[in-house]
Length: 195
Image (cartoon, rainbow, N blue to C red):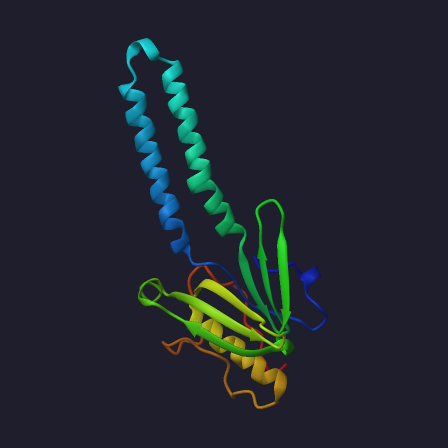
């Protein structure tokens, strides 16, 4: 789910909504499995004279480690979103204290994307947005399908500065005309950029 309708301006439409790539959950997932195995092995190795207090202590330490190494990174991933509308780029993050940053597209000077080897394997990358402000650079890391996001943002920027929109809306590489793929993108129809 993207931005609530009440947060969109008049004639503003959501184009893309995503969170960082799921690869951010690989290490927290592995930590969860390892802590679970460690707690099980530790509880089994506690001598009979130290039971059940020793087992409860191991369980308490295991729970703290799971919260620190798995739950908090998951919540951080879950609450960090990137939304692109026809007028602005919105980033939201924060588990308890929500932080939101709105960047009007009219203030964007340049958009570029970077993809390392692991990014290409996972299908993500880094989006770098240069703004009109002095030293204004916004870096969005682990953006799923970053090249598609880059192209879409470029199309919005060009459309806002001149009226020479392409004749066809974006279509995927298979030519099926579907917009976005996977669970990262909102399932709504894409707006026609020409209005």
